Image (cartoon, rainbow, N blue to C red; front, top):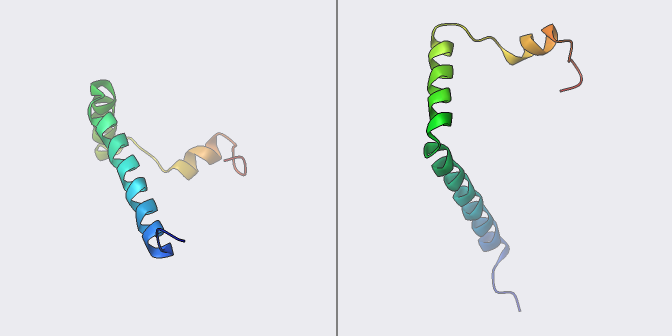
Length: 66
């Protein structure tokens, strides 16, 4: 006897995944140091101080390793 259909199992898995994401978001929001670091990083991006990740990987000679 099956308690849940395949569709219901998929919906339950999606709900569990969403709950995990929400809990992680709540943890981040409550980490004042991390939130501060994220704000600084976003300001730097807006000021043009960031560059594409693939450029950094090339510069460090890490192509194919990451």
